[in-house]
Amino acid sequence: MSKFSAITGNGAIAEAMRQISPDVVAAFPITPSTQIIEDFAKFAADGKVDTELITVESEHSAMSACLGASVAGGRVMTATSANGLALMWEMLYVASGMRQPILVAVVNRALSAPINIHCDHNDSMGARDAGWIQIYAENNQEAYDNMLMAPVITEHADVRLPLMVCLDGFIISHSIETMQLEDDSKVKDFVGEHTAYHALLDTDNPSTWGSLDLHDYYIEHKKGQQVAMENVIPVVEEVSERFYQEFGRKYELFESYCLDDAERVVIAINSVAGELKEVIDEVRDAGEKVGLLKIRLFRPFPYAEIAAALKNCKIVTVLDRSTSMGAYGPLFVEICSALYDADPRPMLYSRTFGLGGRELLLNDIRDLFEESKRYLDEGKIEKRSYFLNVRGG
Amino acid sequence: MSDKYGLKDWQELPLGGVIPEGGNAADYETGTWRTWRPVWLKDGCIHCLTCWVFCPEGAYVLKDGKTPKGKDRKEIREINYYHCKGCGLCAKECPVNKKGKTEAIQFIREEI
Figure: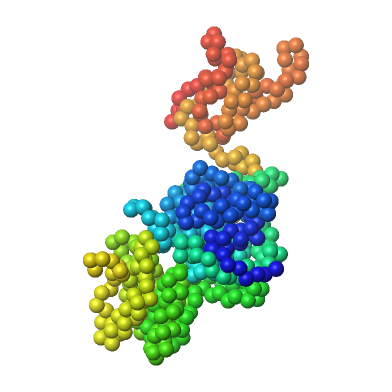
């Protein structure tokens, strides 16, 4: 039975994993993603899933075990955060290069040092070039829904790539929200059976994985990976549409909130979108044309679709919750690329916020909209890029 | 389509670099790695097959034969130099060589 429940973001991810019941989960706990594996370990111990749960000694081993299990022919998942994801680094590239549809719930958290357990996006943004699909979620419901869609996307014959479902640490992972948990059997039907590709355990049809590939073939394999990534965009649209038909919640490549006629647009990722929507409603009530474009699919990045959605806007504020030290934030860079050919091209600037869990309050967002109004009126961007809410300015 | 060297286009490749068949090490010419060469000396060989057991490339080729008393056994026929990569394990492990009176496998510098 589909039911309306009060549950944390981590709890919702664990529920999705229970319903999908993957063949193997290999994991090592790290704050703030720990509860996912705690809950799932309980499901495994209680016999509610058919999963082989492997408790490993590090995240490098977790991803290695996931990779081995996936190549062996299983449907495989894990969860991690921050330094855990960083320790998986080497194996992330191996997983995508070997085209294994492994699924990771990344509960976004700041990377050390200084050590910090709270939310920002430096962990998953650092992995954006690793060849993994990245889907972001504003709240518990979206995180859960993305988990249900994830196996269908990753295992699609045109894709076969690993995927990260990203959600904000603590803000989402530890906050109880009411949300719709779908019926177990409907979820199973939606997700479908896993079909392996040249599984190592298919001993009647032996295969070799992970062999050497030099200058005569490496770039051809990488080209195949790039094309598979490009195929993700129509597949996400198709799977999201099927999800809508089945469960009634609509998802697109990105969410447009009051975007159609918006002159001043903010672009952001994950939970901050909730506060942005709140302020947008207020500012709209005062008659100002403001809107939000909330990123859902970050890899592959839907450049053309985002450019088309922004064709009427005059000024764009990009909110990055991560940094590339010495460069603009990763989201800002993508938005600039997307809009390079736009004619007329909107004014563009970047604000970095929320590193290590620093709050962005409603008043800060009101100030942001005041600022974009001033820039637009003056026709000039005073500061292209700076950190919000930093003492000392 | 493949190019003038017979190399395949990206669309023709199995995903993720998988080799979707077994036994294809037979197609791989590890013999090109060789800088030292084992030479099998028929007269010294006692056909204990130690070299065949140790050879990592399966380069020792067997044939059916008989013991001096007329019982069926497998015997060494030759070294397949397409696969022999010159590691020297066979010459090192050969019990005839170890005894030191005579040699069944010589290990010599490959002539370039």
